[in-house]
Amino acid sequence: MKKDEQAVQDILSCLTEFEADPFDESNPQLRSLQSGLVASNGLIKDFKTALEDGRKQAETLLQERVFTKTKQLTETIHKNKKRNFTSEQIRSASGTPMTVANMEKSGLAALLDLADGSGAIKLESALERRVTIDVRC
Image (tube, one colour):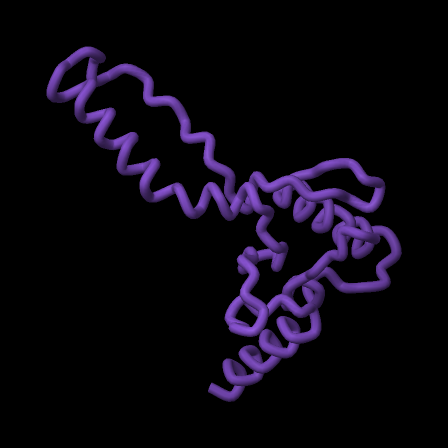
């Protein structure tokens, strides 16, 4: 129990330090809980319309494939093009766009290189805690 309480305190201090507390009512910004990145206007718009758009798509699917049978039930259903935090574009230090998934992948690769090459850190100890990367670096 003591270990869990310490982990919660560590998380809260980290959220405060990076000004990324998603539960802070005085700073109501939509953020990714995984990376702390602030959602773009386009992503917020997609989130706000996702439920209604999903209902419309479900109604269309039932109408076309079940009730009127204008399309076969086995026809391909095209992927939804809504944005999410994983596909969200961010800018790296060099100004090139990258997705959050690519940022996290390159951060982990840098950590592995650092642990493997110089021996300055032990990989096991680095992976015990959440690794955060400043994309401006």
